[in-house]
Amino acid sequence: MGVKTTPDTVTVGDPFILVVRVKVKPGYTVEFPQMPDSTDGTPTKIALVGQPLLERPPNDSLEFRATYKLTAWDVGVQPIPLTDVHIVGPQGTGFLPLRASVFVRSVLPADTSLHLPKAPRSRFPVHKTNWWPLIILAIAAALAELLWWIYKRWRARRNAPRDPYVVAMEEFKRVEALQLASKGEPERHAVLMSEAMRVYLAARVESAHISNTPRQLAANVLGAGLADERVRIIMENAELLKFARATSTPDDAMRVGREARAIVELVHEQLKPKADEAKAA
Image 1: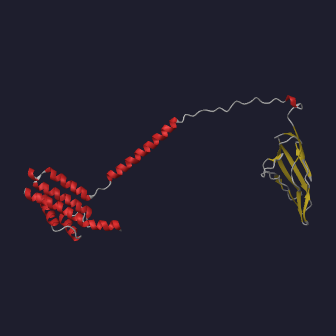
Image 2: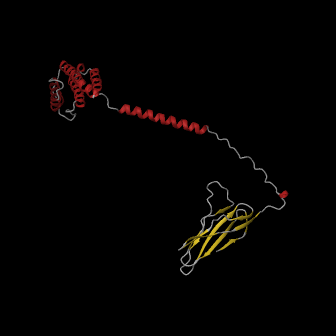
Image 3: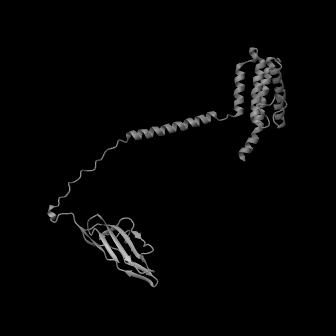
């Protein structure tokens, strides 16, 4: 076995190379040692740089070679802390002690009185940060988010579907406030009041649809067990007023309006038990 250190004299922190060569008989192999583990906190004066380079012999050679790149961190003669080399053969495993060292010279002058300490560094500069712009920006962003949330709630509430009964009552009041019967338009009063009733029934009765003809709508409402025969009379009368240009007296128009309102209130009362049952379920 041969051991060679290149260079044999270094300074602190300089890398150097350690080459270990072992020549064995046929049938034997070599296992080179590793550097001791320093993860347990034990300080080491020699450190391994990277992984050792292990060279296997060619077929016609029995020489094994390992190259270690090391650095030293203390001055003086420093032994390299490598364990024994293992020789593995047919009769078992043998050991070869590996003894190697390197001389680490100091870069300081011999006379320590000539050592000049470095000048003290200036204090670490501390820059004060003005946080107020960031605070104002964060408050503005939070306020904008709050306003956007309020706007979305308001828009959702505004676009939410209204109760058909409330809509029908408002439409009845609006038409009655026009006083069309007393102004010479009784037919229009009857038609508008009938239309408000038709829209309500189409919204609340599952079998009735806004696309139904007046007769179909009346049949569907009555078939669902709601309202009474007045809804059929009102629908047929509205059909004649709209499409056959029939005429109506103010008293008849007012009566149609009252019955249309009565039909809506009747259906609203008839549907209340079903709504209460659904809510309870």
